[in-house]
Amino acid sequence: MNEDRLQAIRQRIDALDEQVQALINERAALAQEVARVKIAAEGEAAVFYRPEREAQVLRMVLERNQGPLSGEEMARLFREIMSACLALERPMRIAFLGPEGTFTQAAALKHFGHSVQTLPLAAIDEVFREVEAGSADYGVVPVENSTGGIVSHTLDTLINSPLKICGEVELRIHQHLMGRMTSLADVHRVYSHSQSLAQCREWLDAHLSGIERIDLSSNAEAARRAAAEEGAAAIAGEVAAELYGLPILARNIEDQPNNTTRFLVIGRKAVPPSGSDKTSLLVATRNKPGALYHLLAPLAQSGVSMTRIESRPSRQGMWEYVFFLDIEGHAQDAKVAAALRELEAEASLFKILGSYPKAVL
Image (cartoon, rainbow, N blue to C red; front, side, top):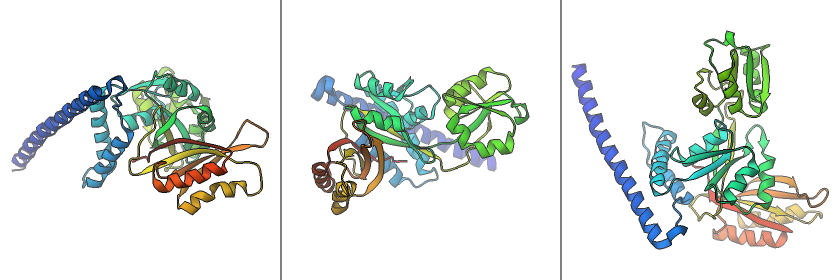
């Protein structure tokens, strides 16, 4: 009786698989039709990737999801479907802070899906240059970590770059111990980036006390060495484990389970409103009493929420600073636009770095 019941369920699954596959191909055909319409109307200037549209689709996926799959898992599946369909219109090239196997690559794949070509680069300013030159469609760079703080090089590069922030990615950072050995007793040294070693200090003290810890330029390089050296293990993410074929000896060994890194997606074009957006600004004010208070007053008076503020040296004079602000809403929203006009009038330097959809997950 159980076998008959299982057979009936499997037949139903096969029938559903056939329907799902047909619907995915129908969606892909429609994506190709979208591409033909855009090319006919806009020619070579046609824009295929629309960050605001993809954010809206993913929000609808989350709103209508009723399980048993989680919203996060369902959104991941739809992200890959959209990625594959977009690749039929025109494959995209995404630059990221490399090498391959880093968390930045994981963030790029989370945002764009696996049907894009990823281009690892050695430095943040190289990512910016590649996108500025048109050699990459978009770039992905880290901007802040919930435990490690701001990535100052990204902010400094944004000051003079003509690129726009087109999106953001929030990635929960899970650190894994990986190596070719079968037991922790066979680990003689551990490679990783200094930040990862620091984030896993308590676990290492408890499980690998006295074992040499070696700081390298990236977690991906740590995984590469662990794959090549006897007795070496690495702390890195799952992408690095897959890339170098390393078994994971211990998962999620980070001391802070909510450790999250935020990444920015940078591109050449401004993004229209999606309905749930964020705007990043660069501002400066003259050095006088109450200057920052007066600078930010228009936001409070207009009811615009500021979610983050960071200061960086302006490099224009000693003890002069610029401020990076994140605010709720899109620069085209009436309330935000009014506040920005007042803020610009008060500021000695004012630059909208980008309005873009909030991270969906």
